[in-house]
Length: 288
Image (cartoon, rainbow, N blue to C red; front, side, top):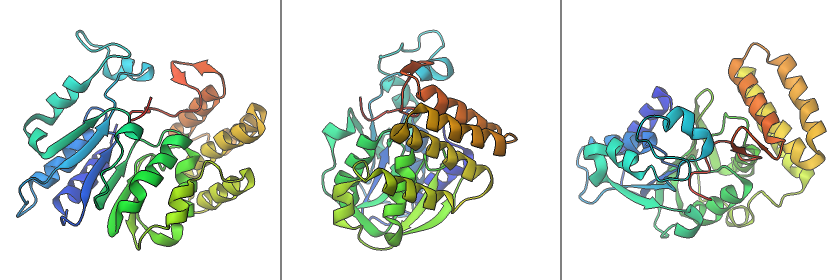
């Protein structure tokens, strides 16, 4: 689920690890992010003994992943574990990975500083705010946060969160339909981390998301406009979301990935469609 450019980014982060804090891989799935980080760590000159990538996932097959990833003979079925496939993909990198399997909200964090925080787990308001509370206080100044879902338009809480934290972050890179990369400029604000974004007033959420949208142009903005439709759907109902989606489809008709995202957002407005859980975009891989 990662582009070659994203995998190269993660490799470089692993290879450039200073040892000032942990490397956290939150949302491993079949191991694309894990192997990239671990390969970089393997190739780091002077790597200290015991250096590890801490990798979280539930390792449970979800309905919408079956066709693309688990349809072959002998593949695990829906609701079954794919931990064996993940381990096979790690290969000889396994000694460089500490696997934490299960619901991230039950596993938590051990309180040590974090130097690299890769986030592909923020699939709901609840998961987003848990990670803010549990991991955010331990992200060290000078460290890197990778928001893998920033430029995919089904998770407005991600963009809202990064706007709340904007004064303490610097955007250093972004990759189409995927990751936004931030350098942490100072200790993240404890009050914002503790409060999260789910309980912000509706108008404040919309204003923060609109501020995020204004930073982008082209298809990237189209993706975030899809997220705006999700937010309007939550606040005002499905008709408001569909009106927003109509605007997106008119303006970004020549951007296939934006059109695909708009379709998925519209599907999420219904109670249960296409094997997905309404309102949750893609894998909720570290939570139920």
